[in-house]
Amino acid sequence: MARKFNFSAGPAMLPTAVIERAQAEMLDWNGSGMSTMEMSHRGKEYMSIAAKAEADLRDVMGIPDNYKVLFLQGGASSQFAMIPLNLMGDKTSADYINTGMWSKKAIAEAKRYITVNIAADTSDNGFTSVPTQAELKLDPNAAYVHYTPNETIGGVEFDYIPETNGVPLIADMSSTILSRPIDVSRFGMIYAGAQKNIGPAGLTIVIIRDDLLGKATDICPTMFNYATHADNDSMYNTPATYSWYMAGLVFEWLKGLGGLEGMAAINKRKAEKLYAVIDGSDFYANPVAINARSWMNVPFTLADAELDAAFLKGAAERGLVTLKGHRSVGGMRASIYNAMPEAGVDALVAYMQEFEAANA
Ligand code: PMP
Figure 1 (cartoon, rainbow, N blue to C red):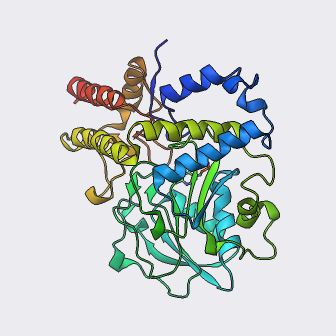
Figure 2: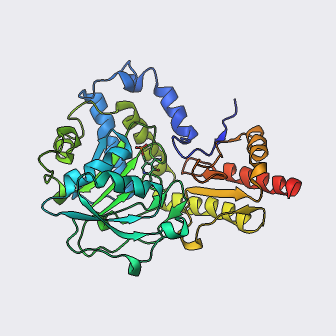
Figure 3: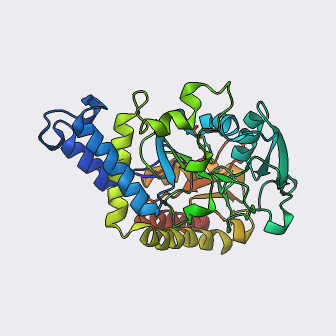
C-alpha cells in the first residue's frame, strides 16, 4: 500500500514513522496490556506519557520555565474567546492585526468581550502582505496584541515578530508552530490547534507566560479559564488522551530529526522549490508579497481556472491529493507541513511542470 502525498491544510499528514510506532503500540502500550486510548488519564502509565510529551515539546521549542504548556480541547477557535476572557484584566481594549481569514475570526469573537483596535489591516491588497513594524498602530494601554503569524488560507506569513513594548503578544500559530525555531520569550502566549504540525485533531496547545494566569473575568467559564488547566496539569477534566499521546510521538520524531533547526532547513527548501516553479512560469501565479510568503501553505492559481479540474484529476492519479484551494481563494493550495516529505514536493513540482508543458 502506497501512502499518498496529502497536501491538506489540516487535518494533515502525520509522519509515517509516527503512525507506524502508534500502530506497533496500539494493542499493548509498553507491556501495559492496553492501548493508550483505554488508559485512565490519572493512571501512572498515562501520566508518564503526558509528562514526556510536555518535556519533549519544551525541549524542542526551548520553552522557558516561566511558561506553562496546556493541552486543551476546543480547537484554536475556542481560543478566540478564551483570549479576551482571560487576558483583558482591568483593560478595556486589545490590539488585533488583521492579515486574513483567521485574524478576522479572532477579531469577530473578541468583539463580543472587548473593544478591538485594529492595529493594521491588509484587506486593501486582498491580504497578500504583512504590515511592517512601522505600520502597526499599537496602543500602549491595550490588554494584549493579537496576530496570526501564518494565515493558512491566504498563505501569508510574518517575516518578523512584532515588537509590542511590554504589551503581551498573543500568536495564533496553528499553521506554523514547530516549522522553525522561535524565541518563545517574545510572546505572552502562543496557541495552536494540533491538526497541522502537532498531531491529530482534538488537541489545542497553549503556551502561556505564568504572570498572565489568574486574571480571568468573573464570567469566564471554569473550563475556559487557563488557570483551571494550569493548576491541574491539563487534567482538570478528561483531556484528549490519544491526541496528546500522538503529539508526544511527533515531538520525539522532531527531536530525532535534529529539532527545529533541522526542520527549518527542510521546510525552507520545500517552500522555495514550489515558489520557484510558480514564479518561473506565466502559467502559475501566487499573489503574495515575496517577504510574506508562507513556508507551510502555498496557494497558487492556474492561468485558466477551466483547467483546475484537469489539474486536480492528474494530480490525484499521481497520488498527490487535497490540492484544491480554499473556496474563498479558488485555485490550488499545497500545504506542506513538517510531515510532508521533500519527495512529495518534488513530485508536485515535476507534475506542475509536466502539466504546464501539456496545457500552456
Ligand atoms: N487559526 C488558524 C490559523 C487556522 O489555520 C485554523 C484552522 N485551519 C484555526 C485557527 C481554527 O482551528 P480549529 O479548527 O482547531 O478551531
